[in-house]
Image (tube, rainbow, N blue to C red):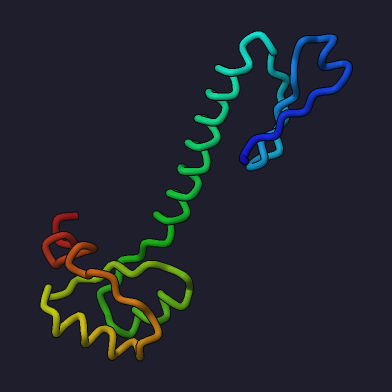
Amino acid sequence: MPLRLEIGPKDLEKKQVLSVRRDTGVKNPLAMDNLTSSVSDLLDTIQADMFNRAKDVYDSRLKEVTKWEDVVPTLDNKNIVVLPWCEEVACEEDIKKRSEGKYVVFELSYLCSFADLSSE
């Protein structure tokens, strides 16, 4: 659960609860009279923030590589390699063999083609 709600005697007097985001540690009071909508909105915000952070990390690890000698070192640095290929099974098999089976090759045709790289 990405959210913790705390309630104590003073919170009851103030008709509020204290929300604590587990992803950031940020604490905020929420009024009890609209708690359902406040929690729902806060959960939506947390989900969007977590998604955006994950997407930023993913995007920062996408590396375009055009020389074979750069492929394995780029993968070793925990990156995702985007490289052109001929869209033939033989090329995919060659990549698997040249990487010594160290990395899994995912449906390369869906990741990138020569046309994709030349259009950017």
